[in-house]
Length: 198
Image 1 (cartoon, rainbow, N blue to C red):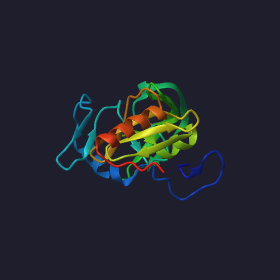
Image 2: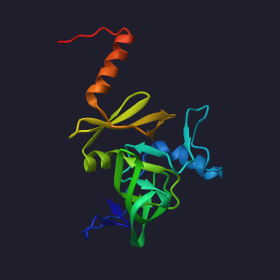
Image 3: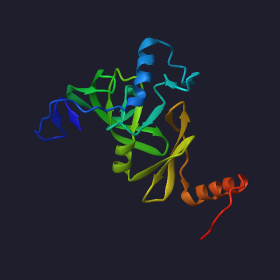
Image 4: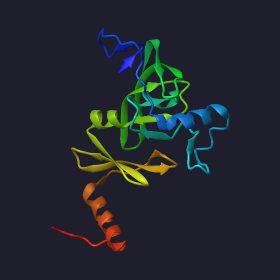
């Protein structure tokens, strides 16, 4: 990751910061800047099917983010302040400052480490690339939801639901993949889809 032109923990430099948020959030960022509503609203799917998150407890599952990020300092179970705030550029060109990082438990079954704290961030982000590499998860996306599979334990650890064009993390109790496959098979049979067991 590039922060303030410095790579990771070594002395390599680059000329510009890394883009951390995918383009699909541009419309959301513009909307979020234009309103100052209460944080009691958690999600809204408008007529253009855009999901608008205004609660600091909801997590957007982002395949374009390079790091997990939050603006809520109250959800860290452990936290380490940065000696100097680090500048991060998001997709719309806005610069946010990371004041520290730590551990967050967005659900009872998922623990994220190295979550960046960005006080002016509009929403919480789970980085798909980071969770797959750091926790040995597979994230499978479907038309209306996504699933987090732990590749070692073979359990479904988490689930997200589709809201507009965004996948939002949902509370989920870990279940064996065998149970999930049985439920999926039941739906296939219920839908009348012919099975080919070769």
